[in-house]
Length: 85
Image 1 (tube, rainbow, N blue to C red):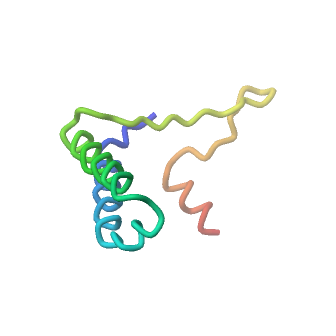
Image 2 (cartoon, helix red, strand yellow):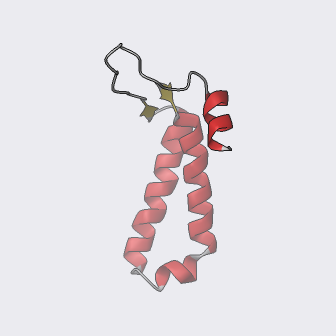
């Protein structure tokens, strides 16, 4: 299990910046009110993640085989190496 709070704060900041840059494109699909709601959500949530008021945890679960082994790669380095093969 890991806390992705700081990463998510950065992600929301990027999403907000992209939304603002693409304002006209976004408004072609939604009303001004809906645009502002999403802008407020991204800005407010990003702030709360960066300040430690919100958190998000990622948990990795696996089904064990008959021997009790999960069969998962043991480190992130192993995950990335396997993914890039």
